Image (cartoon, rainbow, N blue to C red; front, top):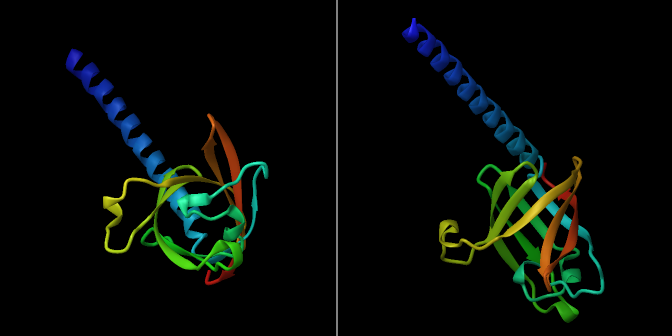
Length: 164
């Protein structure tokens, strides 16, 4: 009788664990499908933040407004992409920066810049962004930038420019 009871408890436990695995797989698949909708070419059309701060996103050494008009290409099937700053005036010379993307959980993902000649796994530093809204042709990402013990909320608003 004890063996039968033990087998029943073990069976129920295995069933519960296997169901949670299915749930986790479905969650991961949903996250991936949301990110897949971001495939293509995008442009930052505006950046919102408290203007009393001087924000220099992603350690590129330029003001946040230099990112307005920047071109972003996202390639979700291999979790890569790049952004290009078309600089001029106070923004300096333009450049293209390859990136590697990783969905962390839900609508939160990280990206890290990949320097020429290095592999993504060699770079452990990166940036955390949260997807706060998404349609077929627009999305917004939010980043919390630490400043003097507080976080400054920066919102990047993107519009599709090509390739769905």
